[in-house]
Image 1 (cartoon, chains in turn cyan, red):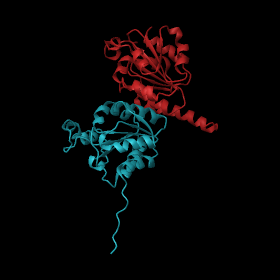
Image 2 (cartoon, chains in turn blue, cyan):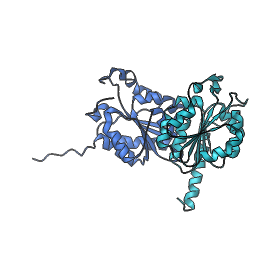
Image 3 (tube, helix red, strand yellow):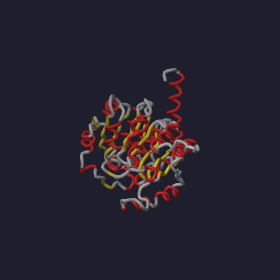
Image 4 (spheres, helix red, strand yellow):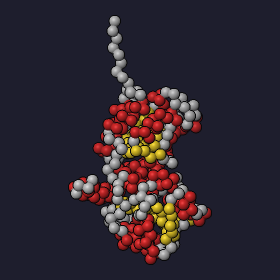
Length: 175
Length: 193
C-alpha cells in the first residue's frame, strides 16, 4: 500500500543559510567550527562575509554595521563565546544593539576533545546569564529558529542565539 | 604634542566624517572640545575601536575615522589583519600612541617594545606619522584618500582634568544612528541612491 513520505528535511547547512536569508541578513562574520565545515563554505558563497581573527572582533564589526542599518549575524563555535563576552556585554548589550549569534556547540559531555568541555558544558548557562536563552532547534527546526532569532534581535535591539548541537552536523570532525 | 591638543585640532579639521573614538580620557577630551552627532564614543569594550569603525566603513560610503590608542590597539592586534583584508578606502585609522594606559594611571603599554607603525606597514597598509600638529590637516586629507590608511600620532602621556561624559551608551548610539540615517534619507530623496 502507499506510505506517507516525510516532508523534505533541509540539510543543516541549507537550513541555516535559508533562515539567515529569510531574515534579510546581508553581512555574516564568522570563525569556523570543524563540526560544521560545509556551513562556513556556504556562508562565504552566499553572503558578504568577514572572516574573523577572533570572535570578539566580530561583535565590534557587526555593532558598526548595525548602526548603519546593515543586518548581520555572527556564526562561530561555542568556544568563541568566551572570547566575545566583554564586547557582547559592554558594547552590544550596553548600547542596545542587535546581534544574532549562531553557535555550534562544542564541549558537550561526548566531545572527543576533553579540553573543550569546561566551556562547552557551561555554554547554555552563560547564554542564559547574559539573558540570551538560546533557541536549540532539532533537525526540522533550524531554519525557523535562525530566522526567528534574527528577527527578534532586530525587533528588540538585543543579542539572540541559536545553539546548534553537534549531532545536527554529522560527519564533522577536527577542531 | 598632547593628546588633548590633537583631539581639539582634529575636531576643527572634521567635516561630516563619522568617527569612532576609543574609550577613556580621549572620549572626555573629544566630547569637551568637539562633540558632534557623528561621534560614536566607546565607554568600554576596550580594543574594539578599529573593529567598530571597520563595520561602519564597510557598510556606508561616508568617510569614517577610527581613533584608537596604543594600549587598546595591542589588545586587538589581529584587527590589523582585518583592516588589511577588508578595510575600505573610506576608512582611516588614527593611532594615538601615548605609550601608556591613561585611564588606569598611565602605566606603560608595550608600544615601545615594538614598532607599531612597522606592524601596520608589514600588514600592507599605508602608514604615515604625525609629528607636528600643524601637519594635521594635510595628514587628514591623505588619511581619507584612496585605500584604508593609518596615521600614527605620538603624543605625550597625560590626561585633561575633565569629567566623564554625560551621554549614556543608548543616547550615543541613537544619535549616531540618526545621523547616519539622515544622510541616507537625503541620498535616497535626491535620487542619487
